[in-house]
Image 1 (cartoon, rainbow, N blue to C red):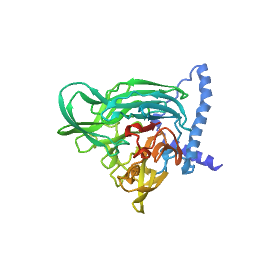
Image 2: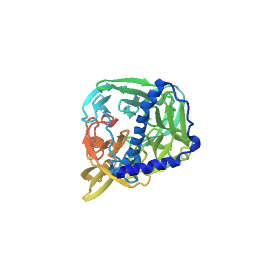
Image 3: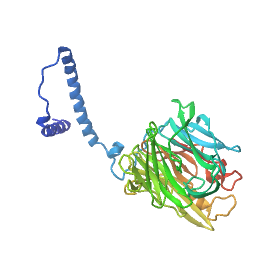
Image 4: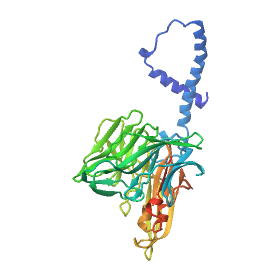
Length: 441
């Protein structure tokens, strides 16, 4: 008897010993002749399937750990790369008109397959910079923010804006004057054809709270969106939280807190969890469990720490909740007011914070430590110039901006066109609203 046969015999004996006699069906009268033929044909197939199932279990148990499925990876082991989405979409403005466009690109090469012009809303600082979120690689939702006239009463209000590439620390906005100027969000559904050569854009009505303060994020299965909400007035904030809306039904659920602070960088971790930045760390909200208290319904997870400037870099959690993909930065003094800035995209164990892998490293040498040198980006700008932009549905397939835009296939980096590097434009004659860009897949 071979070793495999011996292991099968032991496993089958163990299964038979566990059988509950009371649960075994009694013998019945044989079925009609035609059905009996089918049963006789299916019986050996079922037996073969059972044996294959046992053999598969034995085979998986004997595989090297590096070849196991992601769901059974041991703690501390890096996430595999996973399949790469076929398409990515970048948003960018065309100078000097600052007209926003969405470009559908081939993920492997970055080549433009088709493009769609985006509507723009006016803000106090000019045209807005839309944000984008992806479910699968053919479904995207684009958020366009702006201002709209609705009334004539006088008001004073204050609210906290989330971090953006232009304002990485977020900002507090105080509005005084007529209430007929309000901030609004409009949502557009971008659907990409199967070959990526065409795309359609349509207005999408989502019953989100008027207190939404951030762009929305779409769940991997395209069924729900999540966003940060915050109700604040001149006297302070009544609550902050996260709202989740089911697109098919419009059903809404909100988790709030009156504790000081606000959720930023909201993202999905699989279809059942939402990750968000809270103060100097990150938390994970389980939307499948009862409860409406934001902090009681969420748990801290290991994530990035603030750099010297106080900037907390974005972080995304893999769909199996095992790992956090984020960025780190180190400034190495060179002397004479210059530093070398070493930025990294890293993978951390979500439970322990242990470093699992360094996925990408970008280095800038001779960076000035002064903030007032015309035309020269300082160390503080470089400290905030490396971040995770989007994460594929499985494994580590990431879009990043790290002194340049590109994609990561595991730890293999490929530069991609379509998203300008903000650091390059610091001190140039191009205004801040003219070089924005972002992407999603």
